[in-house]
Image (tube, rainbow, N blue to C red):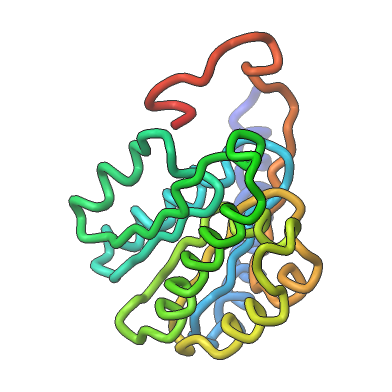
Length: 203
């Protein structure tokens, strides 16, 4: 490639990047509202809870006060909990494990309701900057927790409090209320090929 052609391509690239920068800057200038976000991470793929915990770690790294409420899970050791509790993050855990293991609907409902009562307290706490409700979507699908009650609590939380909700099949009402929704899709999963869950990777 001659110097002349190279200069032309560089000039074209610079022009495209300048145009892109102008558009990005315009969007940044328009985005001036500051308030707590409701973030939903749903879908059938792996990584929803991992993403939620990553955001909690990021928040703690910036000096924010964070809390985690875990539904469904709780009988396995949790690497994120071991790390984040040492960083001052409070954890409330349903601690019944998966519903197909408990096989006791009344016990599961009682456990879900107990943890939900704690969740409502967190959603009223001005000192909590960000909270992760891990696997909350299942509690709504199973009707262990009242949907309208959850929506009201989310709407009435402190204006600057961020909330992250994870789990499959998030209810449309929660998605409509959310500011940011990400859907994690599964392309391949090691478990489907007979590979067991790995410590430090899957839990």
